[in-house]
Image 1: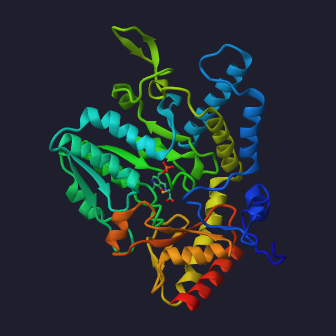
Image 2 (image 1 turned 60 degrees about the vertical axis):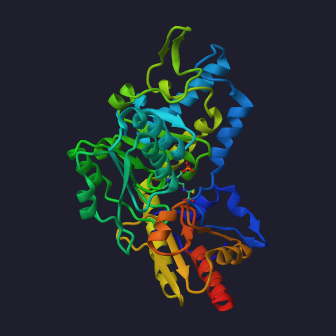
Length: 414
Ligand code: C6P
């Protein structure tokens, strides 16, 4: 690390970097510059240790055994539920269901609430900037039920057109499902307003928090959303764990998702009595170790403080925007006033994939392509972008490294 390294005012980024062992590795003889955080963040040593400790010391199935290991594992698993509840300020632990991730959370709502409540002629509203996982489950449901999918358009800066949204809303609208922060543009949507408008017409609202939950303070009670979904692996936690929040009254009235162990109170061949919330939606042995380590990730973020992290990431986003805008032929895609630390761009005459390969040769990891948001790419008439997304451990020097890499690529390819 350079001696002249600039410290952020509020966050000691080098102290933080020391806690992420992967940041020491080299890629093709270069120091790794990891700018693919919107895809998945790296994990601090504490999270890795929590996983190793679980498997080395108290691995057991949960909610079933009365032996010591089972009780310890159950207690730790349930502590993660409390941590997740607090992380999004849900009013009760019963409203927190563990899933495999954001994708499963959305599919769960489509398969349960959706199947129960959507009928022919009903309308579901999504936006033009959704991730495929917030489009495809609704398309499948609409196909099955004869319902209609409507799309909120966006402007050139990548902001939702709220007037058009209001015009789409009607008594036919049964569900509005929108992303809180766009993975491909960084746009932060005015979800409180979106929710209030939807509720005024009697629609239920799902918020995709896959990208927002790591950057923004989430308060599902203040937002008053009906469903909120997010993934552990984007918040410095393990893969394979997600949180599905649903308002208690909705979770109580919805049909079950998967059938199996744990989601039942009593089974006989005549009738099954389902378990109480949240276990009603958690069939089978869950991802115990990763869910336990997820709490360590949430504690890690809490101990540093989201505001401090946000300030640091905002500084990185502003700096990167300023630097990248000066590069010849480079155009930033997504210039919303409210953004998380995601910067997507295209460069004249350079295909994003070629750029991604050149940057990787210099140890810089970015994501290239459509970012699982093809309708959004179609809106901008581009096949894809190159995306750099920043986390708490990234530095200004790393952005300088990216800029040098881009300059070289422009000289070579444009
Ligand atoms: N976006 C990206 O590189 P899962 O895969 O279930 O954890 O999250 C899906 C998902 C849903 N919504 C949004 C807004 C997302 O960004 C993602 C995941 C990653 O942008 C992988 S495609």
